[in-house]
Image (cartoon, rainbow, N blue to C red; front, side, top):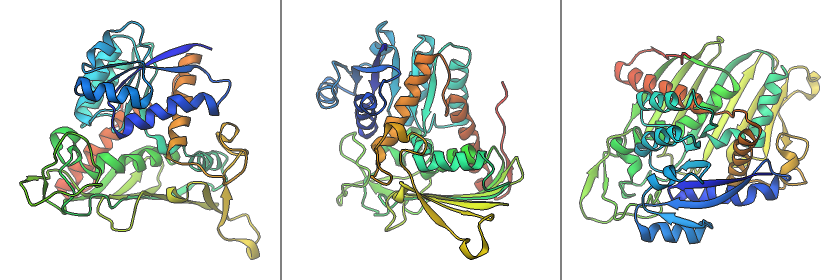
Length: 390
């Protein structure tokens, strides 16, 4: 069992999630495919970096991410920064021959994502974009049922990601509301998770017809660089412009003939992390709600007429990843477990010399979908989605 040294760039919310996964993965999946060693973490200045190292269990810290790229002892570069830094860091890491895991969205635009994909595609490295929600066991179980043909030919996908953390106009102007840093708003931040699930479960998008809306055009300027995610409120001081979308709604045509829709907003009072999908097929239906993440609702047309209807399957040892998680169905998993599973699959691919999905190719294809959604909203018409060519 090999040790793989990790250099993590970014010590915020996602840095915490990734650090937890590296510490816990061998506790859940043993024998582990490899042992992640939390070697060095980078932050914006020496004080923040040192604090992050102490908090997240890293041996060393730095305020210059380039030292991680240049260090021959680092095997894995983990990018958990705001979106505008993803491309530069990933391209440098690929040129140095490091394995890379990058938080979603892969980049701000399709053009940036292509540069990242081009940098890794001919290298003998493992690359992954962190769409962790597809690794929820219930979602993986839905994939299993679909591949087995349990619901027949898919006709329709309906997905949502609804939050309320930015519904208050006095929540501060974090980087997530600034196009130069984030690239887009609810579209890139949360809709991409549902788009990834739609591709994973149904197939490629062929065309989209979308609406983008910005409900709160100005917000209080935020003190400091930390992303508060709506947990603090601004005062009566200066405000800055929001130049990204608060909400996205899009219709979808899939390449296989199915149709669908995705809706995402960060302005839905009462919705916390409401990721859902409902899939209808010729032989049944599947429903998932992340706020009840241990459950998958299924209805099969083959059931007897007097018993037909939705029933709930509680995920556990008999289901995907169940052997590594908790020993009783519905004992309960959380956000952390999805990151632990993500780390397991990533390090397994490195140890075995394989690849992992979602890769940078998947991240690039999602970025092309995002670009098509933006174009569609501007044109108020259907727009075809380009497909990656090798």
